[in-house]
Length: 232
Image (cartoon, rainbow, N blue to C red; front, side, top):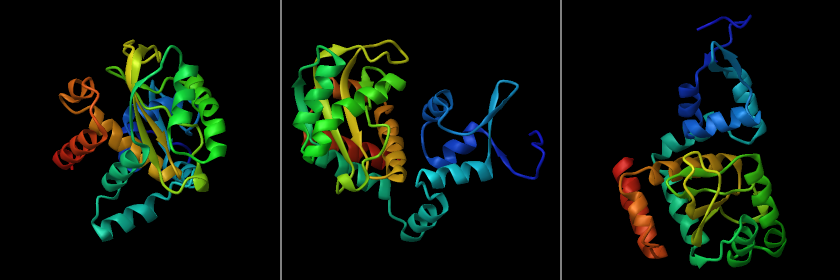
């Protein structure tokens, strides 16, 4: 490791993945967007630990506090939260999807949300998509607003929408998206937890074939529970 003019510890991308519990792809996306402080040396990214902690605090990601709390309780909080979020978000079949605009309007209208969120959600999802694709590959995307919804919602939600027509999300693998998981988070810490759990679940072997059958909410939740139990 190099010296940065102080005794501060420098972290690699792998270190940050472990610290924040988010996929590596998410870290690189934040870097591209300029959302996370880092420097580049010999084509590798490094993160100043103290700066990263301050950044996390500014995003309301209380790393040490949440880590200690979860270890003491020894409860898989993110797993139970994900199941609760899926149930709260519900599953929607054959959703009109001739364009991103139409799809996100359908999302806003179908999810059980406060009126103020319903009126602005489609625009928020479009704005986030214009920053960079939320497509994660294999025909799957995880759209979400750039800013968490805070007290506007009582709990985080993941709405599952099976598209009537596959749609180009400009995903990294170029494949059209046939299902989206719309992530609406109450705060930044749980947003990262849910995103990490979703990415782990969706990358599981044979998951793509399962989703192509447009499962019901009960079947989807059951599959999530079994898969998360296997990977915990």
